Image 1 (cartoon, rainbow, N blue to C red):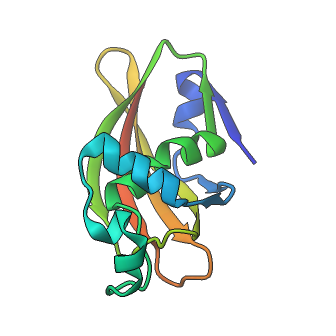
Image 2: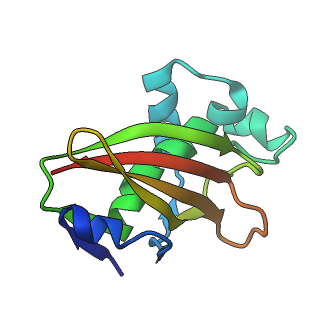
Length: 152
């Protein structure tokens, strides 16, 4: 279920809120290959299914940065912000990749608004904790603290 906020006051009121979970997204070899082409990272553990099957993960795995980039569409399922003139991804405070995402696995995003503070320029800054979960795995694929800014 998507949480909606209209304007800075409603965004500020989200501090401490658990935004729940996105839907599941399957990681396909085609997506991994497209990411490899876009970034120039063609390491065999990602793009060579035959060799990767004999490797340390037993299958090809998604790039960590691919997993991180998928936070964007998954997060859009969780939070809809309106009534601002601009929203920007301000960066990340910490990112870790505790476990791999094998091709064919499904991931989803869990998100919590840690805090919301005013910033100069008539805006607010949100800190969000993101966890990318892998279906059937006890360990997450990615944990990150993200910083977003929204301006009136």
